Image (tube, rainbow, N blue to C red; front, side):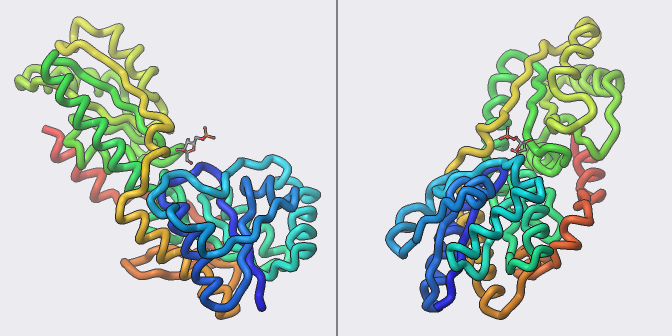
Length: 323
Ligand code: F6P
């Protein structure tokens, strides 16, 4: 019998539980033993393993977060920490590891793989900034949560003829902001990938006011050069020119905590099962992701070495539509 383990690492993402469930049940289906590692790489270093049966992952597919717990482990970034982790895996008799997480987590997965331990990564981050997958687990649910907030803010903004700056997560990537802005019909979108001049933004908002708009909604990515608070500080200095009254809403972790939608449950399920299939086929040092609509593997060396970029046509489209 083969023994494998699964962990979730970095920021939690809705759909991680679907992936855990699929890893466990696909592993059991192959006649393997499956362990969950509590709290990501920190738990791995501490040898915090838990044997998981089919019932242990029952009723979790609809839950947000991760039942295994997650962490950002500074110790795992050291060579000593990583050696402890590999030792713990060997002591437990584990022969393959599935790492569900985003960029930092997959960098850790690559390090383990380069130490000779068989690892398969699963693309999971609400930021959707992971090379090797068009869409990562959690991004769709987080986007829908941001969108619901935007729709609600537009209602109150219209009642009061206000402009809103809505800040969404995404670390250094503008994916969530761009998509939420397009889907929410934002008047402007501010993302790290495009330089935004606060002066030009103020003029754009003024122009929207003069065109008779009842509100103006600006989606701002947290990683943009000027975040929502900084932009607001600038715009407020010129409030006489703005027309609208201004308010700021920062969505923050609200976007991460939701129950996964159907898309993320299915994606997590497919990715988790594919990770176990990859280990069974003797594949490791790869990321499971979705490319051109198909489940594909990409070497972790490529995943870590490359930066995912936004589609410039979508950036242009957002600009054209914001009239
Ligand atoms: O990577 C996911 C993410 O939610 C980012 O969008 C955000 O910048 C970061 O994690 C927040 O990290 P933490 O949960 O550690 O505050």
